[in-house]
Every structure is written in structure tokens, then in C-alpha cells.
Length: 374
Image (cartoon, rainbow, N blue to C red; front, side):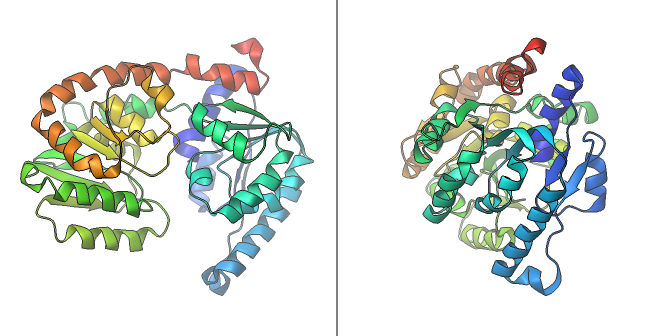
């Protein structure tokens, strides 16, 4: 998350304003990763994650993690702004300490930290978010949901939209610079058409629905390989086993990706995909979807997702009413693939324009009180 979203935005702000940034990481990272971050952050604070026997007992591990975060928060210097990205419910146990050390306190919800938590965690959030000055999201629909559920207006917490800078990803420069003359399919050794099926090992329900839809059109998939990137997510190892088992009864070619993908390989996968299927039950605005649109993939997604304002920009994709409609939509796309790929070409320019720093920075500078640099 730091590398894909936060860091690129931080670099841009630093370049134009000379602002100084520290980084606090609530989970563990190795020393090499910490040192890499010190190239762009003045200080990098890392919580000492529980080890040994404690790490194997979830409740004790959580308590130890909270204890470490409280200690770390107490050692932080004072700041003009502290901005938390992705909110875990237990942050409520150390954020009041940080509140006393900063003039402005911001929070950005990323999606799963709001949509994929239980009612108890929502309750804790509702009681704890009043300490923030502003709460952000990437799209207006999610922002309205958050504000309503947590009564942010009555608690005098402002809300706003912040989009993260991802220029090196949506423009695919890392891959293009390093692979002149090598097609993305050749990079991945794909010998057929490519259908990429969601991302994240934690999306078992989504993967199951996609596999069910694929099985209904198996006779049309002989010239395609289905790719399931399950390189990250909650309980990843177990989820991969379950997806592989479900794929065992299918007749189409499939590949489950397990290892972490560096930027070059990830960008090549986006570019190699003819079709991208993403039908989660909830979402904010997945980076994978933005990048597949920019890459020219024919995207199949759900009407129930909060993409309305995004689609109003002129994006072309296939929207289905329910996950059960996937098979019918996929059949139609496969029967008319070249037509859909041609219509999808419009998406690249729209996404690149959306992700231009000149457009994105206006809100960042406004909320960070840097208006003079807009």
C-alpha cells in the first residue's frame, strides 16, 4: 500500500512544496524494506510485531501489537498533519495519543477497511472517528456511506475525496522501459488469450462466483487461459488451495499466481489480459480495475459497485446486474471480443487524464493547506 499509493503521492508533494514526511508502519517489515523507505521519508517508525509463541495466539498477538503501537505513538514527535491510511478498529487504542501530537488529523478509508468488517468493528469505528479532523475516500458514494454510518457530520468531522497518484502504474512505464520489443503475453509466456480473474487471495467468494460463470461457458474458453492472481490477502495459502480445488473439475486452462508480483510483472499482466473480471460484493475503486481499463482489457464488473461517477467520465465496460449474469455477459464478450476490445480503447486516455497529477493534487494541496502551490 505504501509503495503503490502513498509513496508516489508523497514524492509529488515533496517535489513541489519541500514538505517533510515521516512514515509509521503498524505491521512488521524487514530492515531492508525499512531502509528503502528512508530514501523518501525523513524517519520510518516500525512497530515491533509479536514473535515466538505470542505470534501464534491471535488474541494475545493483537494485545501485544496494540501495546507496541501505544509505545511507538508515545515516542513520536509533534506534527502539523498526521494522515492514517487504511483503518483497523484497534487503531482506536493508540490514535488518541497521536491526536495530542498533531495540529490536523486525517484518515483515508481504502475500501475493505470499511466494507468488509463486522458490526462490532463498525461500532468501535463510530465511537472513535470523532478525533479526526477530516475523513477521506476515493469515490463519493463510499464517502457518503461512511459519513452516514459513522455520523461524521454531527461529530463535526469534514469529509472529502482524495485520489492517489499511480502514474507509473497506469502508464505502465516500468514494463515498457525494460521490455522494448517484448509483448506482455511473451513476457508471461502466454500462448493463448488471457482472462484475468480478480485479485487478492482473500476474495474467495468472488473467485468462486467467477469460476461458476466460467464453467458455464467452458466450450468457448479453449483458446484462453484463466489467470487467478492470488498473491496477497487474508489467509492466502488456504484460499489458494480452495480455489485450486474448485478449478480441478473444470476443463479450461488456468493458472493460480502465488508469488508477490514486482511492478514490471504486474504491469505486464495487465497489458497481457484480453478480459478482466472483477465482481466483488463491495469495493471502493480497485487499482487493478483502473489499470486493466488503461491497458485496454475488456472489463466485466458489477452494477452494484460504486462506480457511477467514474462511468460518467465515459468509461466503456460491461456491467452486470448480479454475479449470476456473468456467464451470459462473458459469452457475449467472447463472441464479439474484437468489437469490445475496440470500444475499450477509449478507456486509456480517460484513466490517464483522471490520474494526472495536475488534477489529483488540487484536493491534496487544499486539505494539506498548500493552496499557494496549486
